[in-house]
Image (cartoon, rainbow, N blue to C red; front, side):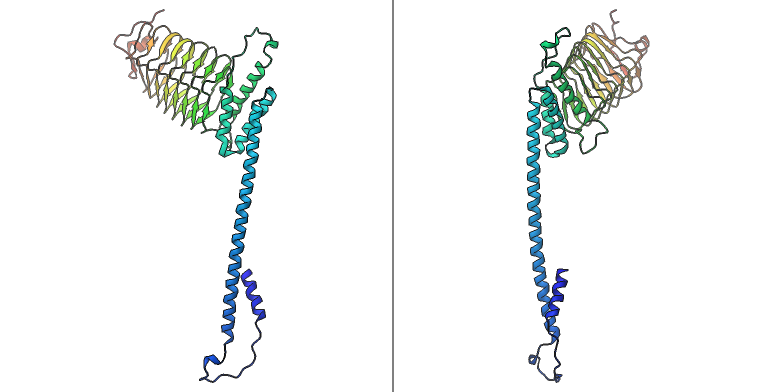
Length: 384
């Protein structure tokens, strides 16, 4: 439009041509300049001038826009950093109410700050990793533990906040699935991870202690990531993996200790992944795989020690995949496979290290083991 306006303005300044004598056919060109030449030269000049003005205005506009964007981004980062400092300060406050506010402030910041979301998640996980003495005995007077219950409530809120960001209904722009979660060495005396989706990223419960209270992974899904309970201790707590799904994943219970309480994998599905219980110690309590389905995956109990307590695979369905007990020691725990179903899967208990108290199998399984149940040549009868 600028170029057209300039062109019209230029035309308005061009004087009207005056009548002139028609030049003879032999008149030389130098005797006068045709009007169309004047118009063409003027038009070209106007176009060049307009183009130059347009280019200058465009460069100026772009520079202004870039400068504005840098200013806005700088201001945004400054405000987000201030929010981070405030949230971190609240999390370290002496008052539990302030710490609760800090949990929500840090979670809200994680939702708004995609570039630093992992950092915000790390802070919340670090809160759970902080030294945490287990709660007092039930008969301890309340006035001797003024902050114990409040501190526990803050921790449960952190767990619940993380869980809420791992649910299937979480909007894609605020989900924390795929991010790293580091609970190494944390103490859990309760917590709800029900229906959480641990997909992608690294999830670490390495060396964690589950002691007291109910910790629920009910219908949680472990897929496409790396989940580790290596060296975890399950003692005096009820831990539910009931209905959980382990697929396309590596879940590691290597070296875990199941010493008391209850760990329940009832109805869990192990498919297309690898679950390690290698060198785990089952030395008390009740570990149940009742009705679990093992399909297309592999579960390893290599070198596991079944010394006391109860481990049951009753009504478990071995439809495909492999479960092996290589070098396992059955020395005192009650391990049962009552009414288990073998339909294409493989359960290999041929190469065990100790048979002082072998697994309890239905008489029909011992007399005529199905193709998937691999037994040693001589299976001792279990002790009463």
